[in-house]
Image 1 (tube, helix red, strand yellow):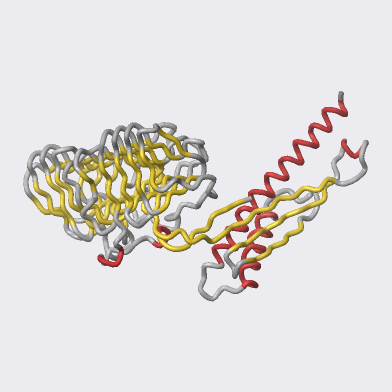
Image 2: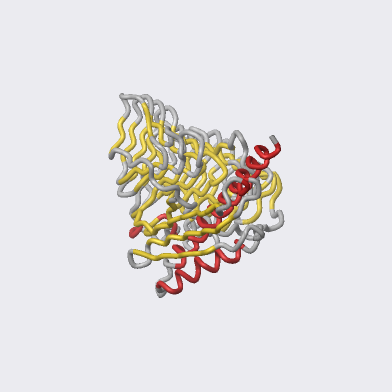
Length: 392
């Protein structure tokens, strides 16, 4: 019994070592692939970047089990980087029966893929429906694609007479829905899990409070700054936003009743868990993201340091006059729910969504254009061109 328990312990130890090696191999391959995105990076630089990453991280884990061999290969003109890690390990109890060493290894391959234009990126990795259309909802992605990063068999869900049309559709897991629904083209399934395309965007500096618990009920012009306690626009107020960054913290951004909110060259930084936005049905919303600055191209930027809840927070658009939403919604910790009767964002040169989950409910028509050339508002670089994907 003692020997059996010891052999089980050997197995657990070996599994732990293999898991550690796999995590490092994955990250090293990604580091090499990212290095290859540099215009002047050659094969030697790519190999060096991947090897250095693996070496530095191997030094942080237990080394008593023996040295680890690192092998990095580069293929397809630097667009495919493979990393293999291997060590020979001598188990303690199992060696009583077999004096040979156990081979422990891990391999990872990272690839730069040409994804074209991405209009929707559903981030959640394990739960169902990172992208979900229900009850006659429509999503039209003009000349751009939809990517669902969930590994669930229902990574993409299109139900109840809903319709999804895009240039391309790719899901890490599978897709499903009712026969009455339409999906065009047929999604590509089992796509490699993809990195957050906006992970390199840095949150704006955390400014002190300029305004506290602001409630607007009459026509006015607002200045950029930090709105602590939230910003509520009610009644028939027509609010014009001056260009700049609007930080919402400690309360929601609400546009309700018959109010109007318009602004050009503006971006919202949602600084904490209470900074949720909601645009009610009878409101008018017309917003264009900044052309420069920390929120260039980002209409809404949710703080990625916000906690990730078991029941995610929800940002809601039910406005029936939100025709211009020019820029990118970056909501890595929340759901974006679109539930309007009239088309949403259809008059924007481009609209892109990177969210934990995109949910269209009860008949809205969300139109995501990708006419990047017709606007000076930049497109975040992670949404166009090449992207690193990982396959083991």
